Image 1: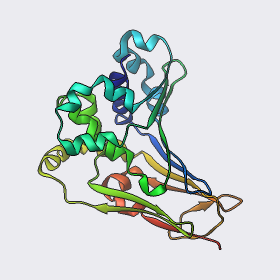
Image 2: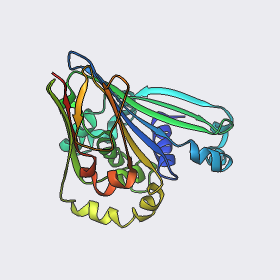
Image 3: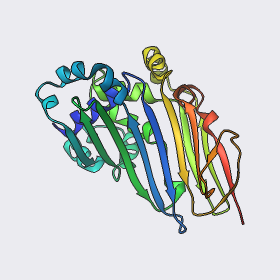
Image 4: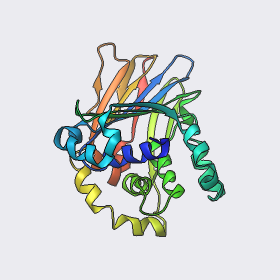
Length: 250
C-alpha cells in the first residue's frame, strides 16, 4: 500500500469511532527528548473489523506493520507540494522528521498508529495533529486526508516551554479563517464520534515535580511523571482547557 494511501486511511479510521489519543513527552537532563502521539482505534476494529477489511480489499488479508517517515511521504507527493503556498510548505517541512508506525490487524482487532520524533528543545514542539492537517492540501476536497484536516482542526496554536525550573503547555485560540468556518459545518458528525474519545497527556521529566496547576494530574511513584486525561471534545472545542504548568523541586 502506498504511504499516502496508508496514512490517509489510518487517519480516516481514527475519525470513525472512539479513539484514545495519548501525547507522550520524555525530557532528558539536557533538555532534549522524545515526543510521540499514539492513536489507538482498536475499538473500531473490535466492532467493525470485517467491514474495515472489506473496505481495504486484498490489503486486509494480511496484517499491516508499517514504518515510514513523513519525509518519505513528501517525496512521493513532491509535485503536489510544489504547488502549495510557501506557508503550507513550511508547515509540512516541520513534519519531515516524524516517524509513522501503523499496526493494523482485522483478525486481531487491532489498530494503532504512532507519530514520533526526537527533539533538541521542548520549545521546538508543536501540535502534531494541527500540523498534519496541512496534508489535506495535497489532494482534492474529498480525499481521506482532507477529512483528517477538517476533523482535527481546533483553531489554536500550541506551544511548549521548559527551562529546567518550570514546564508549560499552552494553546492560544485563534480566529478561524473563512475556509475553516465552511469546513466546520461538516465537522458535526466528527464531534459526535469524538464525544466518546479521550486525549491523554503523559509527560516524563528528569526532576521531581513540586506541583501541577491541573488538580486532576496523577503522579508516578517517583513524582517525575504525570498523567492527565481529558475528553477529546476539550481538545477540539476548548483546547485551552489542556493548558497547565509544572513546577519542579529545586
